[in-house]
Amino acid sequence: MKKAAIIVLLSVTALFLIYYAFVYFVPYSQGVRAGELIKISHRGVMVKTWEGEISQGISGAQIFKFSVLPRDKKVIEDLKKFQGRYVKVDYIERLARFPWLGNTKYFVTNVVEEQSPHQRN
Image 1 (cartoon, rainbow, N blue to C red):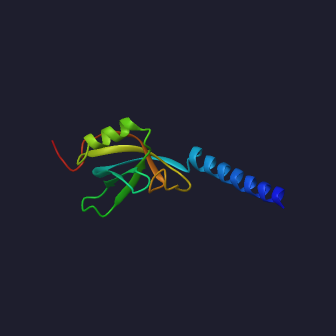
Image 2 (cartoon, one colour; image 1 turned 180 degrees about the horizontal axis):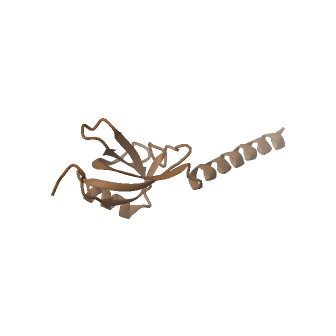
Image 3 (cartoon, rainbow, N blue to C red; image 1 turned 60 degrees about the vertical axis):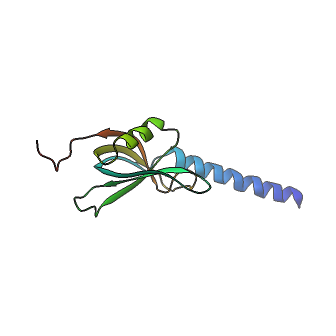
């Protein structure tokens, strides 16, 4: 009985680790989005994650919500610096989300400031 319980526990743990590795290392999609960076915050009670929002429309009706991994310190600093400005972000989308990584399935990997198409020179 004890041996069977250990085998079941190890099997469940192995399956979870395989699923986690697949979700973490195999991106579902990759892309680029642009818009006005309207929010970047460090939030959470038990686990703090970096979360942000980009407005992709003039009225703010289309919002792109994203997370940033804590190891991407340059991306976090750039997002803080570009707050309120028009930016272009590279992101990966994961198949699923885990609460300790972020609140969304979208993870920003790079950010650059862009010229807003709404402002004319």
